[in-house]
Length: 150
Image (cartoon, rainbow, N blue to C red; front, top):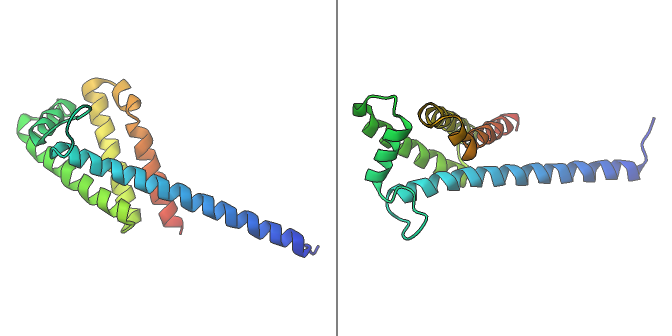
């Protein structure tokens, strides 16, 4: 059964539109995740001023890290705060620049899963759900899988 040229053209156009939508969705996801990580970094180093500042400075971030990881020994909190900062900076830059995407996305997914789990242990399950931490983790995992397929 032969398809007419018009049918083949329509099929090509549809696939082209689907590919454009996929590419746009993955770009949006990649930038949303990357910029969110970098925004958190900016906050903990005091780059935001005025209202709606989360931590305000690194000391505030260390206090928050201690709250989120209330089940961890106090001696581990500075390490956890710095490890999260380094990971978020690396993943944020990689996602925004579009480099090492599969690994940056997979690392982001794992980091967010760990963060969400720590939030759930320390604050209850409602907290990571309200802040969409698991949703962001799932989105990062989808991005990693998308990059693997390419």
